[in-house]
Image 1: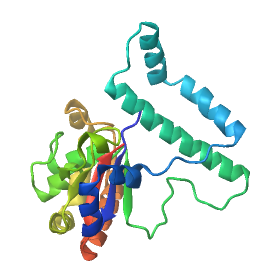
Image 2: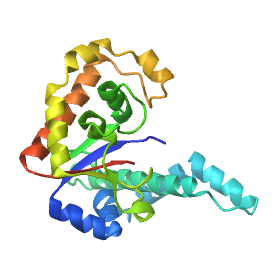
Image 3: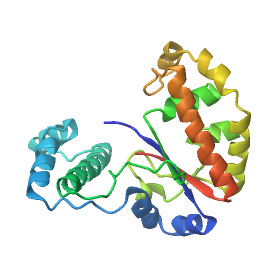
Length: 233
C-alpha cells in the first residue's frame, strides 16, 4: 500500500478548532465517504478489496480466532477509502458528470499539495536525513510540526502535524534560498536507497518538479498568513 505525503493550508482559527476537536480534523482531511450506490461500482470495489493482501491477512487471522492488529485495521480503512473514491469517480464518468477526479487539483489551487510517493525523497534532498524534522525550517517543510488530535485523529500513518503561521513563513524563506538545481543534479538515489528512503529512485527533473510545487505552496501559505497541516495517508 502506498504512503502518500500531503499538506493543506488552514487558517489559525481552523487550526485552533481542529486542536479542540480531533474528529473535525479527520473529517476535513479524509472527507466524507464517496457515493458507491451504483451496483457495478460496488461489485468492482468488493472484488478488488477481496484481493487485497491486508484483507487476506485479516481473514487468515480470523480463521485462527485472532483479531487484526491496529496497523492492519488502519491500512484496511485507508485502502477502502481510496477504492471508494475510485469507484465514485468511475460512476461519475459513466453518468457523464462534470466533476473532476477526487485527486485532481486546478493548477491555480495552492491550498492543498499532494507530494504522492516523493515526500520522503524530497525530505532527504532538503535535509540529508531520513528521519523526522530536526526543528530547522527545511526539516519542518515535510516532516515537521506538532501532532494534533492524537490517536483519535490518525489518518493512516499517525495523526496529522501542524506548523504555525510563523513556522510556515520560516519554511518559505528557507525553500526560496535552497539551491535546488545544484542539489537535484548531485542527488544520489543509491545512497538514498541505502538510507531507507521510501521510493528513492527520482531523477533531477522529478526532484525539481516536486520542489517547485512545495516552494509555491509554502509561498502562498506565507502570503496568506496560514498555518499548514501535514500528514501521510
